[in-house]
Amino acid sequence: MVLTKLYCFLCFQLLTLIVYSQKADPELFQVKSKTFSESLYYLQYKPENYNPSTKWPLVIYLHGGGAIDSDISRIRSSGLPNLIEKGLVFPAIIVAPHLRNRKNWTPTFIDEFVKAATSSLPIDENKIYITGVSLGATGVWQYCIAYPYKVSAAVPISGWGNPHEVCKIKNLPVWAFHGDQDQVVTMAGSKNMINELIKCDGDARLTIIENGGHDIWAQAYSYPGFTNWLLSKSKETKPILPAIKRVGKIDLKTYPLPKALRTIVGISTLDNGTFAGINEKGTLPVIIKFDTSGHIAGMCRIKDATNLAWQDITNFNNSIYIGDIGNSNFNRQYFQIYKIQTENLTSESLPSEKIEFQVPGIESLNFKALFFFNNSLYLLGQTKQTNTYLVKVPSTPGISKADVICEIPSLTSTSITSAQFDAKSNRLWILGSEWVGYYTISNSIEELAKVKLQIWQLPEKKFLSALTTLTDGKVVLADQFFLGGSDGSFYIMN
Image (cartoon, rainbow, N blue to C red; front, side, top):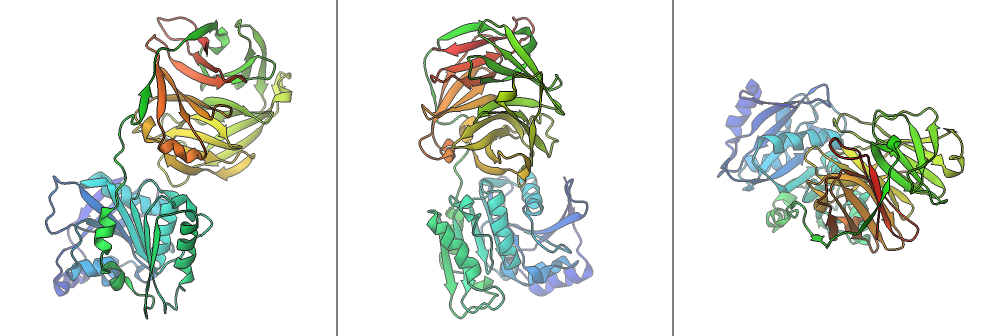
């Protein structure tokens, strides 16, 4: 992404600056995006007492359909930019993207401007807000549903959205406004969204402007208490490894790992007391069956499969799932999971079905683990900055889109290698390269964002890379071969 400040507007825009005599002069910026072929433009307003050494709240403002034009100055004729230029005091940096000749706001398009602002300005990333009017309000709803973890509050005005998806943002404060005489977008557009949020215990409110039509932005942005309400909303600061309880020594019983699994990345328990293991990327697409003596009981090659970046394996309902989900270069857009019936593991050549998916609305993720919880398939993925996200993937073969469920602050800046949920103990076991730990989950998978991670540190020179659980709840770990060490081993925790 390349960001360019354009010091001169068109002559028309310069004249407009003089006529307005505004309190805050906007700056025009151009973004050259890797995602979109065309150049992207936005106006930026800084507060009167702006100091670059201070972290500032960021407000993203999305204009309505009336400002879609090649002339960016149309943004300034209404909405929040218009009020700022007329003297409205707003102690935040305002970024107003321009839709230009596009027909609709999309989450990925909006996110280009969020990334541009946060990478070039002193932004308090715990205080990023989004607001919009009419078509822009619809963009607000869509962006929040796609990126619920990126914003701290949302203010859609005279808009509409998809009520069936709105509970994804139940933890996000939303204040919607609508005019009771709106003939362009009826009040149902906002009411349906807010009512659904309230049903799922969302933090939502709706203000109806009496005798208000479609253009109620002036009443909304100057509504008593609005600015204080918005700027009071803040995400919790992301700590590094918060809520972690380190427990005592770990008792491991060691077993030999077959040399054919020296680069093991996944292990799964089979019904007959044996295990299924897979190797990391670049190796053959095979499942290796073995027992506790290190004896190989069979090798099964998966038909029409490649090992681009296998990362983990799990089983559920008589099927094995292999995640080709690694993305260490952060350049993959599509991922795949192979589904194999366990009854076919006696064959040397295995048929499989493929779950292909992408993850819209988030920067590229390197997935490390997959597991089942309450009949649903989940993945753990990390960004380049090692922020960790929980992603839900359809378990039915075919092409689909995954959903980002939540961020998991307690796994930030860690090296995750595998995961497995044990339903008997309600524990989600997580493996790092030098530690093993678990979360206790009572009801919802979203508890991962809040509950403690209890870990055992393994100081020995190992690279733990695979984890599974036995039917009695015991945990099985495996490590890879490393130079200067021994062949890989696997361990059962007592």
